[in-house]
Length: 464
Image 1 (cartoon, rainbow, N blue to C red):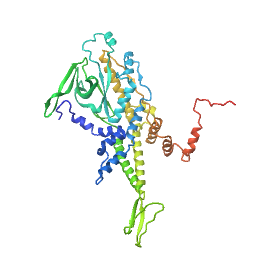
Image 2: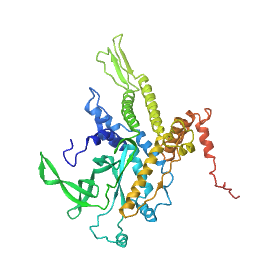
Image 3: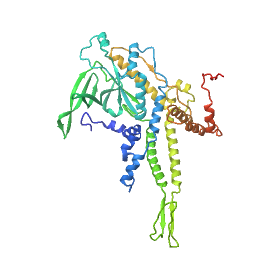
Image 4: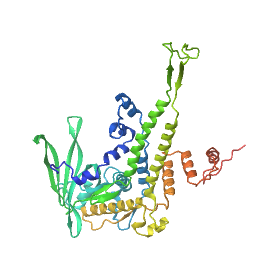
């Protein structure tokens, strides 16, 4: 039961079960190490110091974060197109849509990133509090007051209420967490956590009381409130994989679980490699004879069955572990690539665009959802200033492939372009998929590539 304004509802708790894992994966090796036993268990009888060393040397294969970044880049590989119905004033606002220097393309990419990684985020369309100082359009323009977008992260959403109004499910209350910075002394500053509660036509801000307590805890009290000129809550959800109204999960959640499995398996592999590299000296029936190890030393023993030898690992477990890691990496690539595969029924990108959503790949569907959300947010911005229509924008969606093999190679190519996948590895993967002939050798191909002349550039001729 939600007892204070700061508590999350059961619906929020249900959709955020996997978010700590996703957040740690996005944080890279440092965040995964900080999580320690959460994602890297300490085995029975494992010494504490040995476990601590295992954590310190573990490194993350960033399959999840790289896949999210590459997929996010596809819809924004071309600029957002503005329709003829978008007012010039709004197009001008879109050059700095959040009043933090981000244009609409950058803002759209950010919400897409979180929709893919976490499954849900949102756009709050804010309007500065003017307290009656702005009376005319000229006053508004002179003061630089205008609507702007705020990116609401999933982790900050606390709860909501909705009712069906005129047949449509509509938000009647929305609570989210935010942090504000205030001066502290002459030079310092402090960060204050507060909860903003939105209602149609009004808002509230709640803060933790410095003095009042309730049930042994600081009491949350109403700090500020006000009215708005909108008769609706200016918030638009953006979904990755929608599970319900205002609810969503990452479409890559299974990839995230596989990435954690790889983190754990890779740690085991590093441990066994460390053990295998250090041979154990085995002595039998030496009767206390001194052992000196060196090129010019010898060990003497009287017993006929005496023995002295190194015991080394056979290497079979190491080979099996390496194969399993390689197979897991391939499965992770396939899992991410699935979002680019057009569903059965459509065989070309052109056909996909001509048909309805059923024939789209998952990423195209997400791009459509982002496009609709940005349209709705722009419309709210227009309503803030009394405009009837905000117009429509178009997000690039001309991607998607017919097979999983082609999709995974496309994903790897994009990783190669942004420098997170080597040329040789891309060559090997293309060869494995039959795109490059089996007889072509990388070393030979690399020499031929070095001899290529960039297209459009004439060859230089040295004068005598």
